[in-house]
Image 1 (cartoon, rainbow, N blue to C red):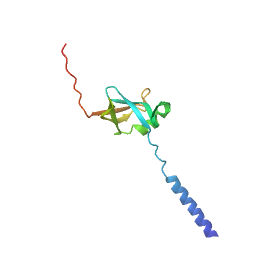
Image 2: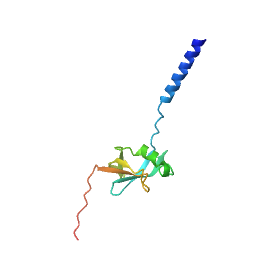
Image 3: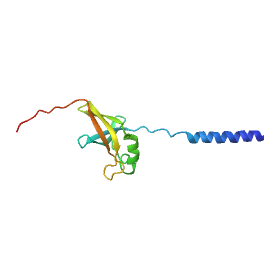
Image 4: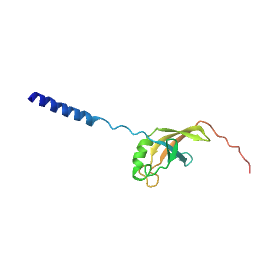
Length: 125
């Protein structure tokens, strides 16, 4: 009986250690629509997409939740497609988040890589 209790307690300890070492499942970032600001240098969320419908950001992307939002969306080198006129025209790659700032905590600095080069006609005045 004593051996049984020793084996049972060892099993209990080992299973609790294994359970504690399990990582929390990662929460996938929501489908988010961003706006490019400041000549394509800054990214800011404007809406979520859920079940094919636009949803307001609410508190999830602002205030105290900015750190969690940035952790899920603004990892350095994360790339987002830039869509204009219904076509992908480039990529925005995250450089850093602005979590510590007062007014832009849910924004990030990005580098913009364009697939196409837009040439505007020159005009003479």
